[in-house]
Length: 74
Image (tube, rainbow, N blue to C red; front, side, top):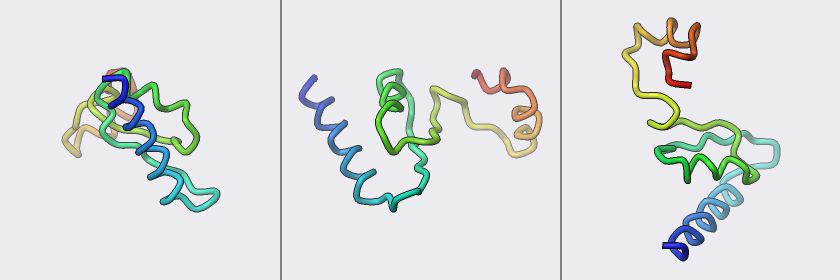
């Protein structure tokens, strides 16, 4: 399991390095576990989304959720 985790981290680093021009901001998608959320400390991660941070919302509920972040589970 540890080897898979290390490979995952190296894969993420490689993708961020290859696909990120200097000064760009990157969105990390698929944050569903605390383990993946912990990757936020690595360079290249600026914004993230996933079930751990907030469940999908209907479009008409987005303004209210943004006004009251507790509704997002944050």
